Image 1 (cartoon, rainbow, N blue to C red):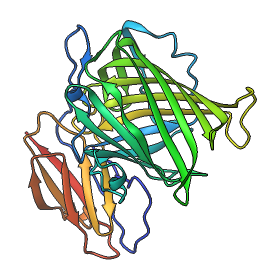
Image 2: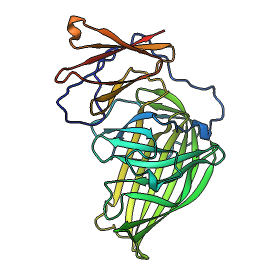
Image 3: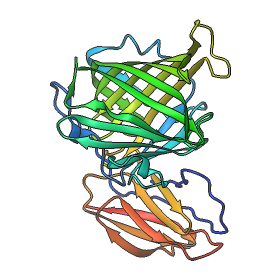
Image 4: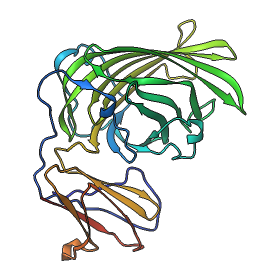
Length: 355
């Protein structure tokens, strides 16, 4: 199977690169454990720097059809190709200093860097505690309006405890401040109530069926300016946790209101967000795929994991129609880096999986 890989975000350069994927082995189904209680621990939450996942995103979510689908032995189907109302995003686990703002989150071990195809890159900062779960330290959002881009929490919050199973429930409180010219001017107080109300099988695009737990979470955010209440946000959040993927599907509806209950001026009264993962490092895919991560002349190719492959041959060509493929490398992982030097020429890559 051949596929043309596209960069996750557009870049301007006099270089032109395309990539061709050729997988010669039949892909196996993703691992699916035998029936029984699903338990997700801290070790099941991705935290290895360099891990990448890709997802479809939308702002047209309707929770009404999903809310009743709770309980054990559920079957949630989020499969299907990308829809017209969906864009894409790349989530990569990076060192805290990626982006240059890790100093505001000194106790974090890694950051989730999210690059949407139609928006700003953001960072969220975490560490894994084998006893408590995942510690969340805050975020950096350069597109925030009316406040600072770097938002460290007053104290870390455990957003994903360990272990998690059907019936698990947890509560947490988060406080953070906004400022202009280093002067505090607003405070956000968040109350979170979460519980696992479903367990069963989750079907993802390209990946197929995986085990999952569904979390029903309600967040109330109260925003004050110089101590005077301004408005509140109520977020209803459904997300599906799967071992090795983390949040495989995430659906949110956010409503903002003034203290008197009227829609908050200048703020979208209702925001509907949805994310469904279609490629995750270490999780086999039903359909071969290849994509490129590029920084200047340096590129990294990443492709679908094939469990039965012992290694991968990297071949390159400038004119595939003439069959000028040449072996350039041999690797044992589903990732390869190189630096391009042929200005103005298209370069095709072929990944050949070896048994």
